[in-house]
Each structure stands twice: as structure tokens, then as C-alpha cells.
Length: 165
Image (cartoon, rainbow, N blue to C red; front, side, top):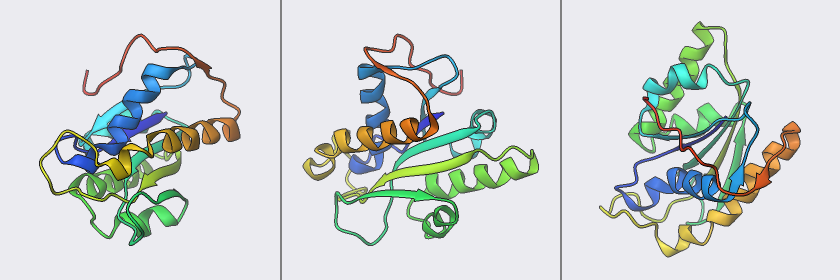
């Protein structure tokens, strides 16, 4: 599963969702791959993410880096970074991953993140600093799919899954 999270109403906070929108415009995936705009649903995504064996999350992540800096977080790095409570949806997302343990179904998770420039301004536009990194984030997602041996091809995806359905 490729999951974009974030609130598109607060500039760079919507980075993950904007990347998912672009991925759906540019690529097609086999039936065993879900591409999901998770918005800010957090814990409400539990049912969705618990179905995945492998989870690639795209999000804005405050990591004390330079705005626009890209990150790949995996394993123990994920709770350490998210516990910083950089945004409400990140805390909820960590709780959803933790609740997956109760279901004995925790997907192998990688977060493709960007250091945001602005997550406070009410705007549906990404800052220029993060907008130019959308392609880099897509490349990182595709590299994760390559690592997992998942095929994909260029071409628009017809349906855009949004949850809850």
C-alpha cells in the first residue's frame, strides 16, 4: 500500500496527499497494490493499513532539517520521529500502527518524508520549496516498490481510492 497523509488546507502539510495525486495521474499498479489518499484520518485508517503487508507512507515530517530535505524513515526511526508530535495526524498515525500490533498485523512500514517549509499557513498550495520535490518523492516511492519487487507502469490510474468509502 502507498499511503499519502496530511491536511491539504495547510500548505506543505498536504505534501503526502499531493504526491499520491501525482502518482495516480502518472502510474498504474497491479491489483495487489493500493494507492490511498488517507488525508488526516489517522486512527480511522487502522482497517486500511492493517490489510497491507508492506506500507509506504508519504508525509511532511519535521526532522530539524532544512526545508525541502527528503527523508526515508523505517523501523525504529518511525516512532522516534513521530513522537515529536509534529502534527496531529502523525500522532494518530502512530497510534494506528500501534493498534495494528493488537491485530497481530503490523505492515513493514517505510515513510518517505519531506521537511516542510510551512505547515501553518492556510493554503491549498505547496510552497515552492516542497512543490519542486514532488518528483523526488515519487522516485523514492518507486524505489521502495522496486526494492519490494512490485511492478508498475506509466499511465493514469482510473479510480482514486479515498477512505472511508
